[in-house]
Length: 238
Ligand code: ADP
Ligand code: MG
Image (cartoon, rainbow, N blue to C red; front, top):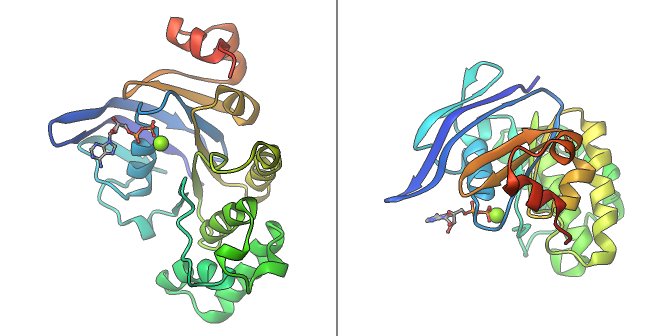
């Protein structure tokens, strides 16, 4: 289970307020997309959920357990970064094993999980390759694999298609949709692309200037946009 509750979440960096009170209730197993223009606070919010940055005010709960002070490795939440951030000197296997070792898993369990994740992502023939010997799409799949071996209840993906060619984007997008169904957990996917949001999400969080403008299904946003910002953002061509 991973029902998530965000209550009045604020974030400031020194004197600058970046998130101005975010309230969200996310159900277990939902595919949620955070969408909004560059700089609106999507990555910041994701980092707070992952525990990579501290919440300035407000409360974050998963299944009624307060998460504000829980260490990232104990949250059951894994994040895939926009930049992949693979370890260049490690092969694919080692990249996937690294985080699992930090969790204290033994080698048999790590190998079992890497076997499962690499088959799911079609990386099993590539386990001995270094990141520089992989295509962009394969690197992105390793970054996802590295998160999956931790068996997170919640998978966070920050603009996972942004470093891929147009030709690969639809492949990886379909793969992420399939993974979400196979894993059976909650997925939060960040993008600035409204078409990606509309095609992937169960529900979409439209953000602007550190606030939530609307939270609803693609159909609700399309048929009943809450304001002109949502209407313009969702309706504008890419
Ligand atoms: P998005 O992911 O939606 O493009 P971000 O969450 O990265 O937006 O950034 C939101 C705002 O917070 C931006 O104005 C950015 O400059 C600022 N910001 C993000 N991280 C930091 C930081 N570590 N220190 C200061 N300002 C930051
Ligand atoms: Mg971002």
